[in-house]
Length: 579
Image (cartoon, rainbow, N blue to C red; front, side, top):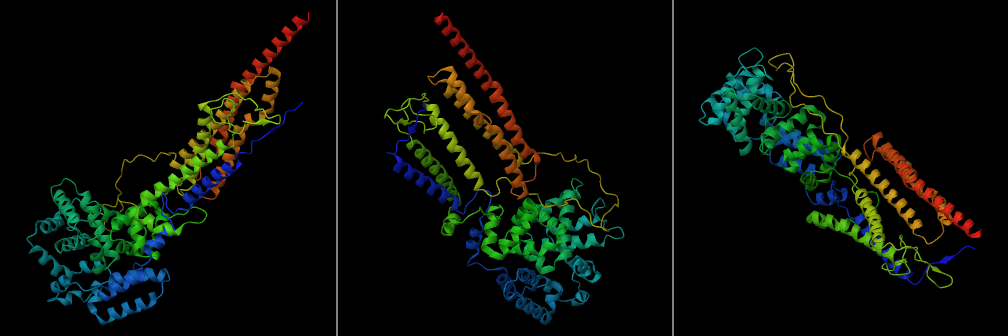
């Protein structure tokens, strides 16, 4: 006759309270707009509120008489459809029309005005390109004697680099076609002598020039000259000088100009973000790391305001948000104490997991120290006769099992709360050793012995494979626990065998989990949550097959064989007693 059981209902109120507390904690952590590898849009909006927008920054440069930087900012504001951008551009056009200096230099510069005060005719053939301006004979006749008269060692070192003939990226100044290099050297030397570079970058430039003159290393100097050439070919004097002193090192300048040269469509965005952030090096580093997504994030932060740009550059992580709502009221606290608030988020997840574990324990009818308490915490049942139904004792192993299950849940919540945890970004494509047509000393490309790229698994693939493996290990442990539970039951081998047959679906659980993992991975790849990789998807199915094979062949088959032998032994003993 079948035996029926009833659950002890005396602890249901406490179960409900613990469950409610766990859900509240997990939900509270989920709604906090703070992440480890991303910045929430709510934080950008709060950081940008009350700070100058790109249009207001353009007005500040307009009022300072710097039409060059102001025009780039106004064009970015116009592209973002900011109110009043068209009026700012009209005001800039009026300023340039009323002041001839604005059309040449892009803004007032006392040093340049004094230098050309006695020879304004040299600027009569002014060009929109700063490089072409310095290539003109009239400008060279004014700038070169001025620099030659300087007593600064760095200025003299840079001027002597005109005599070097070992340039690889430029045609030397002594050969036909070397005007571009000469103009670049004059620009660099004039910027250096005028203290437009930051002190640290100026020291690097001086060292690179001295090393090149000694024949030790000319590559670093060529990269610097190439960076100045890129800036001079795309911006006017005021635009170049306004951003140049913000580079803390020459490497940042090179990285920034590489991005501008390879992504000319984004040069205004890069320039505007650099002025708003105050550190062009951080802008270049961010875009170089995150590629096309970096440009999109940069544009989003520029639209939010100066504070948003500074926040994004300070964190150096992309913009992303988890599905669902968010607690916007927590934004000021997250901005002030980001690490503590991130710790609070994870603490709420852990606390919620503990409360869920406590709710699970409260479902039991007996304390966890009672040997009759079931492994899952819900098998401590009471028969309708009022007597507890005995089940094998598990001790600390039962608690560890439940704790591990809750840890998996908490870990999954933590991973899902990081929207970019499984995503790898493709860096921006830059060519640090690129050549400009007509400027190279040799038409033959310089061969490099760089090794061919090796296909490597990205981080998201490795994490996915590890996660699928851990899930199958968990299923494997559950199956072993069930086999052990049946083995310890004080019942006959015949009943144990029937119980094993009843658990066939559980023993096939590895396949179900593996198929579900493969389907879930393929779905996330289609939705572009993770990088497309079939290896990560089919690894789940492979692990599921291996898990089921190990359970059924390695454990279920041997245990059933043992039960069959025990049944035969009992039947033989019974027949002997009957005889």
